[in-house]
Image 1 (tube, helix red, strand yellow):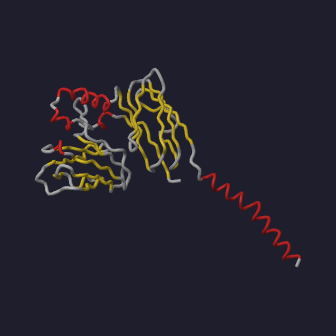
Image 2: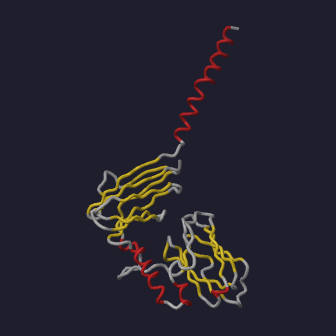
Length: 254
C-alpha cells in the first residue's frame, strides 16, 4: 500500500510541476522574434562579419542600412526597395512570411525603376488618351501573389479594340497580352495561370466586360502589372545587369 501511495504522489507531483514547465519551454521556442541587423556598405561591398542574415518564418526582420554612396537596396523575392545615401541611415522592415534564400542587392545611383516609372508617368500627358493603357501600371497592378493567390481585373467597354499588354513584375521576361474584341468567343470570366514558365495562355482575346483572373499556380511569388515591363536606361536590358549582390536573407521554417 505504501508503494502505491508513493507512486500516486509522484505522479501528482510530475503532473502539477514538471509538465507545465515542459509546455512553457516548448511554446517559447515557437514564438516569432523581432530581429535587427545592421548593413554597412563601402565601395559597393558589404562590411560585415557575415554576408548571410538568418531568420525563421514569422519573425519580424529589420535592417538598419548605411552606405557611402547613393543607391537603392533591393531585397529580392519580397521585392522591397529602400533608397540610401551617404548623409543618413535607412531602414528596411519585413515580416518573414515566406521561407527561402533571398538576395540582397544594391543598385548604384538613383532608383532605376522609380526614375523610369516617374518618367513614364510624366510623359503621360504627351500621349493620346487612346495610348494611355500602354503606360506601365496605368490600368492595374496586383499585390504580391503567393502560391494559390489570385488577382482579377474587368476589361470594360472603353478598352474595346485595344491590345492590353501585361507582365510579371517579379520576372520581366514573362509577358502576355489581351485583345479586347467584341467578336471574341471569350466572355464573362477567363482565367490565366501564372507560374515559373510564364503565362498560360500567353495571348488571348476577350469581349468587353470580361473579368480576367490571374492565378498563381507556381512556387514563386508573382506580381501582375499592366503595360510592358520597365526599360532600363542605357545599354542594359535587365535590372540585374546593374546590381551588386551584397548578401542574402535566409528564412527557415519555424
